[in-house]
Length: 338
Image (cartoon, rainbow, N blue to C red; front, side, top):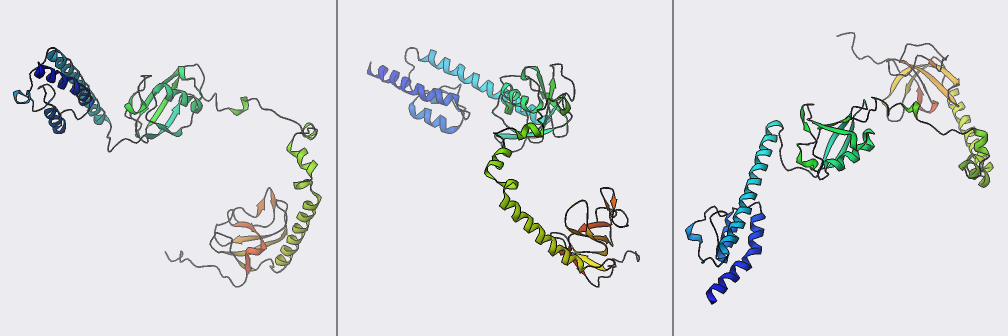
């Protein structure tokens, strides 16, 4: 009686460990087999080296039935593992997967409603239903009217994302893939891109001046910014001083002299001074230079007003502080000898 009670107690105490062992992916490894042998029971259905040598205890009443249930669970888990292995093998045949999958994936989003693509990062743990809700903010289509298609980095069609409760990571989604959203709501292409159809709120300057809770009224009440007499007077004084300095620098740069322009962050450029004085496009004194090479921005005219003559892309306007007048002959790059 003691032996039978002790055997039953062994089976009951081993049940929790057995259920954990059945649910593990490494169910057939040697370490599990050794642990089961130490407890004193086993059956051939789960252990790769199982057999008569592993049956060391007599089965108590009901033990065989319990072992049969565990064996069915183990065979079911093994079948699921085999199905997953076949599924992964099939996806590997269509798309090369290397290394472990990252928790997030960078994909391109395209839509039948938009002419542009967006690059976004999403978690692989999202379900397809949750993923559609996030796509609403990107493409503008309702989640209930979406049909998703997966394309590889080479725009090869892989599959449809049609299982609402499936995880995004269960599909062969990798960095660089494209997910195309097909809209079935009846909207037209470009409907959400035409900003002229968006109603805008506009207010006149007179009505804005009458508001008491605006930024402009706040600056006026506190005499800040351009409404501050002290700051305005200081800005005018600084502008006048800067204009005087530029006038003195421009007076030392005669028209027709050779010069070298050294703008911040740019290599030196040589050319000829073509204009010195004030301009209409910006306040202050400017120096018009005709470069020896097509390194400029204009042909001597800005906003329809011509200040000097030169070829296109040879003219530029710079401040007097970056111009040095002197003996700067044209550089010979040896192009004529080639």
